[in-house]
Length: 113
Image (tube, rainbow, N blue to C red; front, side, top):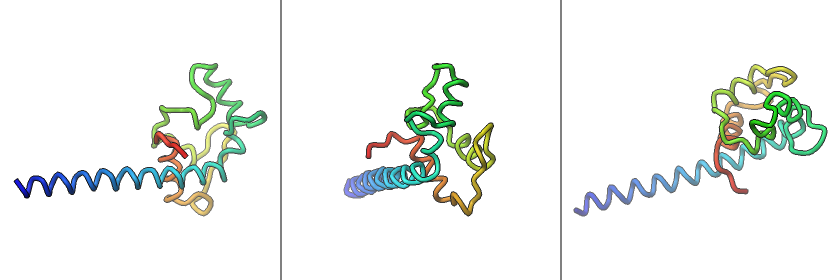
């Protein structure tokens, strides 16, 4: 019984650690987003990425990426590295793989600043 309690304790601690790590990763992703993405994808007037997505989605999905809840991680990675339409590509020297993963976590995690 003690062993089972110990295992359950370790599983619970691992879940708490992973949740804290995910939250920290999302915070880092917010910094990346604010530095590299918000100029084109912000929710304020005159942002070309948001305007392009408004036309593309026709109001069926939010054009503001920070409001989206359905962005697949693979799609975010693909568009950041290869660009799409008017969006440029971002090299690893601009957005590192680690920063890209943080950005993915931010755009796909229920993030509360």
